[in-house]
Image 1 (cartoon, rainbow, N blue to C red):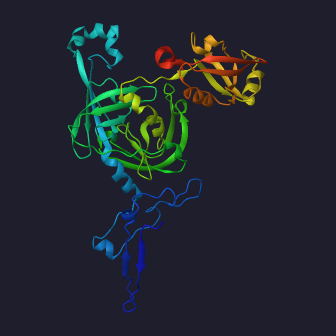
Image 2 (spheres, helix red, strand yellow):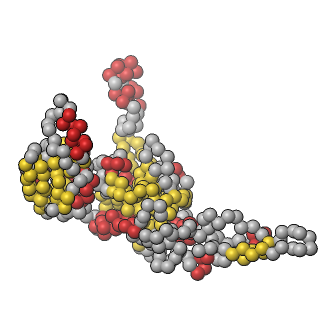
Image 3 (cartoon, rainbow, N blue to C red):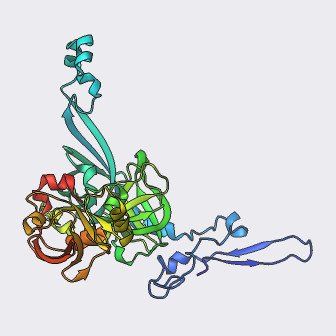
Length: 418
C-alpha cells in the first residue's frame, strides 16, 4: 500500500519543476497493517511495508511543515515504547569477589604482604542495568532472569521519567525469564500488547526496543533471520529454549527488552548476542514466556522435564566414518537417529536402562532424527510422565519406558545436560 500520493504539475511558462505534494496520513486510518487484507498475507509474497523503498518526498508539503510520518516502525514504537522500561539493579557482593586471581597467589601475598588484602573492602556494591516491559496496568512486568538475579534493589524507570521500586516475584534460570512487580500507588501504567510468536516467518520485519549501554529508549530495525535456534546452537546449552534469531541490533542493556512485529505487538524478549559476530541477536519467543508468566507472578517454581542423557544427531554418513576408524570404541548402526554419548548416573534414563551408544529412533511412536527433536519432545512432556523410547542397541531394537524427572531438583544435571 502506498503511504503517500505525489502529484507533480509542470509550469509551462518558466519550465520550472514546481511540485504539489499530497501526503496521505496512513496511520490515521490504519495504525498497523491489517492482518486479514493488508499488504502482507501469510504464505504469500507480500509487499514492502509502507515507507520502505518509496524514495524521498519533497515539495511544498515539506517546506510548509506538513510532513506526516508514514513509518510502520514509528507506529509500532508508539504502541509499545511507553511500556518498555529501564531496570537498574544493585547487589552486595564480598569485597574479594571478581578480583584478579593474582591477589590470591601465595607468591603475590609473600611479596606484597597480607596488609594489601586487609585494605580491600569486605563488601562492595555491584550495579547492573537491563530492560523490561509492562504487561499489566497495575505494574507487573517481564524481563530476563539474568537481569535481576541476586539483586537486593530493583529500580524501574519509565520513558516518561517516573521511577518505581520493583520486587522480583519469580525467576526461571533455565528459560531466563523473570517477573517483577512495582507498586503503582493507584496509577495506571502503559501496557505492551502481546503478539503470537508462532506466526513469525523468516524475513518478517522486527523492531528491538530497549536501553542498550545506558542509552534509553533505543530502537533498531531488522528482520527475523531464523526461527527455533536451539540454546546449544546459540552457545548457551544450559538453557532450555529455542530462540528467534534477528539482525536487529541487540547490545548489552537490551536484555529483557521487546522484539516487536510490524503490527506493534511484542513477539520476543531480547536476551542474547554472539560476542564473536555482528548482526546476530536472539530473543525468547513471547509464546514461551506467556505459558509461565502467571506461575512466576505467583512465586512458583517452573518444572522442567529431563531424561538425563547427552546426545548428538546421527546420520548414516557419520556412522560410516566412525565404523571405518580402526580406533572407534564401538561399531554404530548406519542409520538415522540420535546417539546417546553419556547417561547421567541416577537419572531417569539410567533407571530406565538407557546405555551409552544407544540410538534413539522414536519417542512415543514419533520418529526422531535429531537431538533437537528429542529435546523438544521432552520439553513438551510433564514431569513424571512416562515416555516410551525406541532405541537400537547394536542390532537389537528395544522399547524403554522412561519416567521424566524435574531438572530443577538435579543441580548436577543442570550443569551437564542440555
